Length: 76
Image 1 (cartoon, rainbow, N blue to C red):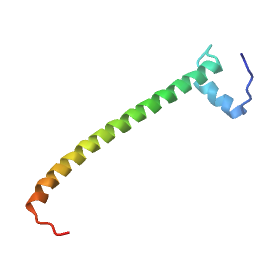
Image 2: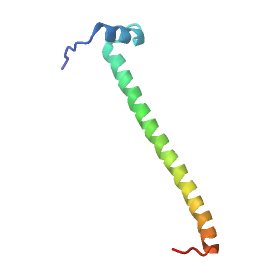
Image 3: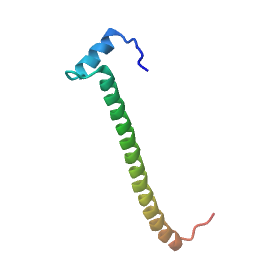
Image 4: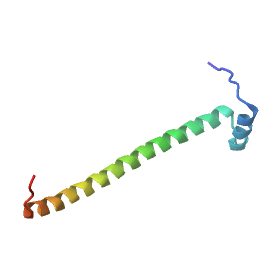
């Protein structure tokens, strides 16, 4: 089903800047949506990778601390 949408003239002008010759506005919008989805996936991947690195560092710190902890006689 094809539908009509209304946008402000300034939005149309911005779409025109992105739009290539013979490209429809629908194609421009679909391309933008694909780019957004790719960026979301990449951001999620980077976040997961960062968490993995931080977890490895935390484990290393805990191991280092546990060896020092055994040498000290902590009073609680």
